[in-house]
Image 1 (cartoon, rainbow, N blue to C red):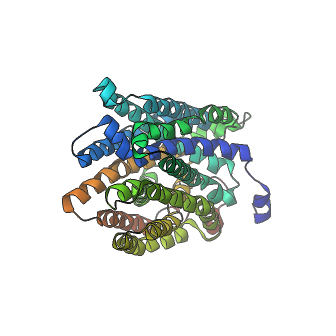
Image 2 (cartoon, one colour):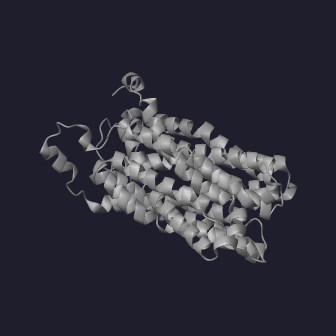
Image 3 (spheres, rainbow, N blue to C red):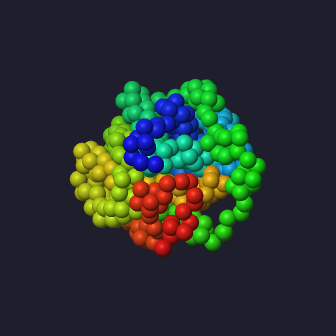
Length: 442
């Protein structure tokens, strides 16, 4: 396929919207819980020590990651066996139920121990749903895209997450300016969650209209061809790809959840006003929205590996100075500027990881393979990030702890990129959908 023909083929906007609305809602809910952790903690985990209440809330936030691998296995496998579309519908249904349930759960002062138990239950449901979301949606985007533009279209996966960050930040910023501290505590965070739930009916309707991109998309496919797609592939090359992908995602996900901790960090550590803290979330989300698709398109032109190496090394040398400036000046301008800088650089890293990993796996294990690798890395490292950051700051008294933790994670991620080989079709001269196991690792 040449550039002209690739440029002429475009995914219909309604298909992209179906993926974006689902991804955005699921990540919006996860991030909103994080952004309002201080207030949620007081409602469900009251304590005379505010830090203990915050740690209990962050532990509950982390509980949502425990069911991610289970959701990745069940829903991701469903995406490979039944189809991408039904898997995406199931994950969206479950997330809609969980987000409404969490928003309507009464505080502990009204129903006692049942309140925190319900919160944990809904977090587990959310984690299950989100664990099964990334694999089928990424596979759908990659398979629907022209092969020479896979980077651009698959980057909508990361773009949708940043849309949710931006939306959560805008909602939080508006509530922080319109409501008092007591009102934010009493019902403000519930409004933020229900605002996301409002898009559930439209999201379900638009996802039902999607085509199927798995092998069932061609009704005339001969049985022998279908059987070949289910023939077991050699295991060893995909294990190596999975390990490298897990290491890359480790660096990316710790960065994502360190940045999403910015609201809590600004309020509890820097003692900035809530509206400034939420403004940082807006800056981070907007930076990603502006850069994610460009980074995917750039990886189509120059390759996945150069983009990953450039952004990885830039993050390695930028994280510590940025946090030092935040702590030294403790001003709104520096806080927002440093978050914007780190978010822009990170937006050249995380979205391209998903592109590399998705196209490195063959179609018959693409949904489940990506889902399991992503969920495993996010569960172990993303789910523990915010709790560990709060714990490290408390134990060491060093507010630079988040910067050191993120830098160490990025060192692991960059090392994995150095070991990986290129997968972009333009660079390796590939013009079909054959797996690239022989090309993906050194």
